[in-house]
Image 1 (cartoon, rainbow, N blue to C red):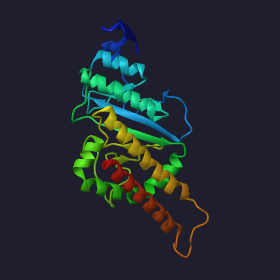
Image 2 (image 1 turned 45 degrees about the vertical axis):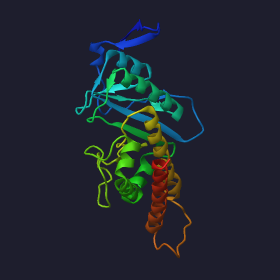
Image 3 (image 1 turned 90 degrees about the vertical axis):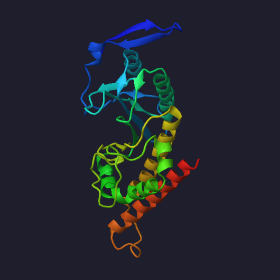
Image 4 (image 1 turned 30 degrees about the vertical axis):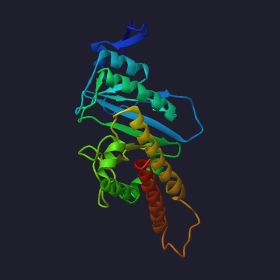
Length: 263
């Protein structure tokens, strides 16, 4: 992708993406494996899918500088996939950049767009995500029900409420449904499809809650999935024990959500 540079009215160098190169976008299914941010000791990684209904050449240039990858999405103008971020500091900085772009009219994010947020974990892989899929409903239905009880607070926190592309779930829902508000089709991340960027500060609140949710799933459920020792007098089968651990994680997830909306 070719970039040209010019000076803005403050004498700063600004990148622009030419129209021909802007059209050379990646497939919807391509992943952005670029890394951004210094390595940290915590186990989490982060990513953003920034759907836009419009973007200027200047915006495309700036996003390219931050290693965003433009891709086709039939439902929006362009979907920009962020690099993999090792820490929330990188995300916070990007949030401020996007605030400026929105304020200056360089990008448009309307009701047709989402800003899906991904959280990865160093122990989240094809095998462990399989555990999450098997107990998906037990893990996330209590959160969904709590969010439905607080529609105004849910919208204020996530930037929008449930909808066609970020749907509610119940105990009969298919874990692999792409439109679930928490999507587990990816092998290495939880995708929070209900996330919508309204401001950098608001999106950081989403990121912090999503981290807490992922942490609860990993520490209270996944870490115990294959425990060799469990209370046989209390649980008749290993499945009953795993269900108990999923319910413990679900309670912590709901607690984290309630703390976030009351902060």
